[in-house]
Image (cartoon, rainbow, N blue to C red):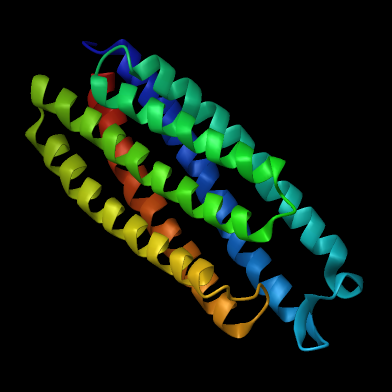
Length: 217
C-alpha cells in the first residue's frame, strides 16, 4: 500500500458520504411533510405544528444527528488524507470555511435571510471540497498509476460540480426573490435542489468507492 494515509482518509470520507446521502433522503421527506402541513394565515404561509410537529421534529433531529456524524467522519478523513496529497489539504481548508459559515448561521439563526445565504455559501464550500478530494484521488491514481480510476475521478468531478452549480443556482433564486418556506414554488425549488445534491452524493460516492479500492492495493 503506497498511500496508507489517503486510503484511511478516503475510506472515512466515503462512509461520511453514505451518511450524508441518508440525511439528504430524510431532508426530501421533511420538505414534503412541511409543505403538506402548511396553512395560510393572514396571507402568510405557516407550518401547522399541531398537525405534524412531532414527525417533523423527529425527522429534523435524525437528519441533524446523521449529518453531524458524517461531518466529523469527513473532517477526520481529510485531516488524515492531506498527508498524501495537497488536494485533500485544500479540501480541508474549504471545509473549515464551510464550518465557519454554518457557525454564523447557527449564531444568527433568528435572521432567516442570513441563514439562507449561509446555507448557499456552505453548499459552495462543499462544492469546492468535493472538487479537491476528487482532484487528490486523480493525482494519486496518476502516480500509482491507475488510468481507469483517474478517468473516473475526473469525469465524476465534472458531473459533481455541475450538479452542485445547479443546486447553488436554485438556492440563489430562493434567496434573491425571498420565496417563502412552505409555498409551492419554494417546495419545488427546494426538492429540485435537494435531488441535485442527492445526484452529487451518488456520483461522488461512486468515485470515492473506486478510489478507496485503488488505494487499498
